[in-house]
Length: 170
Image (cartoon, rainbow, N blue to C red; front, side, top):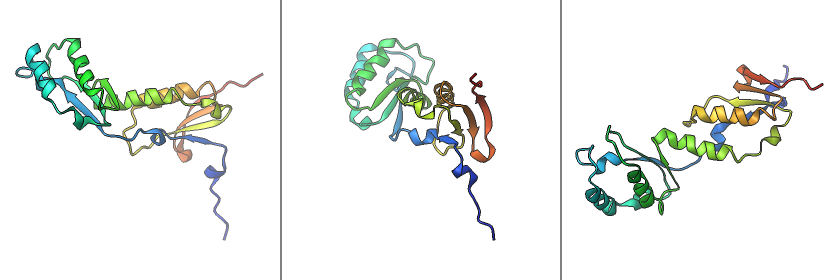
């Protein structure tokens, strides 16, 4: 019986798995409308009082998105004031929804990686993920890899879709 050889494992392909970089932590969103009169009207004195009495410690070490789920016209300072209350507790605070948290985290993380390790290599950006990796992360990693990689593919080694091939150097 012939030995089964894993050609993928023995190949020079580098797999870039965004899931490996997924930041651990609880993601939460705060809806400002909970502190508005009938969800629409911001009365400054009442708003400030409700923020003062809110238990901000419940967001300890969490990633928090601040948004308003109603069509209320909320002044910019309202989100800033919520941010100031959250700052001593939250790991990161963003303006947006819960999906925007992962986008912001990946933008920050991917911008700090050293892509020179992929210089002149064939790279597969792994496509299947059990974690909610945002599309923006895939776009960013392709952008960061392109100046270095010989080729970029997407998917799995057994069925990768070619995306980029560096021009031949003369």
